Amino acid sequence: MRNIYLREIQNYFNTPIGYVFAVTALFFNFLFFFTGFFHIPAFWEAKVASVRSYMDLLPLTFILMVPAVSMRIWAEEYKTGTIELLSTLPLRTEAMVLGKFLAAWTFVCGLVLASLPLTFGIWWIGHLDWGSTIALYMGSLLMAGAYVALGMLISAFTREQIVAFILIFFISLLIYLANFYVVTRHLPPVLGNIVSFFTLSSHLNSFARGVIDLGDTIYFLSFTILMLAANVQVLRSRT
Image (cartoon, rainbow, N blue to C red):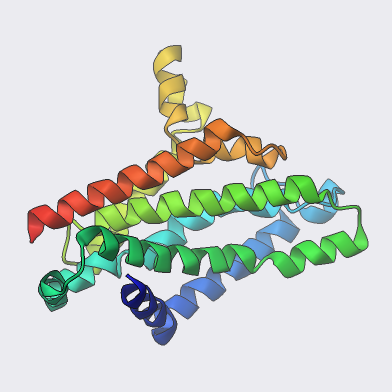
């Protein structure tokens, strides 16, 4: 698993696509943080020493960034035939899935933590609430893991990276939009609440309020574990 992890990490930094998406995601996150984006106020207009606006942008960022990170995880292995080589190694499928997941999650977490200079800058010029800030980072990292695990599972169904990117993008977008009233208003209240419950961004709200909610933490962990377990079963059925 360690070798799989190191191999995947090197792939992210040895290919230009990783740098392109990382720089692009960070650029637009910082831009919209200071200028505002739809319901997210601009930092200087909000007059609050907090990175909450930046974290509120992350679900949208993950919709674009995670497909780019996870589309190649299995699609490339199947297309190049290296999945057959991996299956012959004395390596359990669970270890292979976990190694690739940890590498992709590490890469995405690095992009989330790249906002730390911004956080320290806000702390220097204002009274930053470190309790709520730590909760925000924790929730964002957990949500990143859930999106990565989902993207990995979808990537296991196809050989083409572009197809994987499109599928991951649209499924992530649907999960994100299901949290909005404009989508659920035509559903019965009970069904609308169920649909909203299964969206990832809705479980970030408690962390955004500065509360590390046990229920939301368990939800993110359970979702991630479920996606990884399904990934293992898909790989076993295809090899």
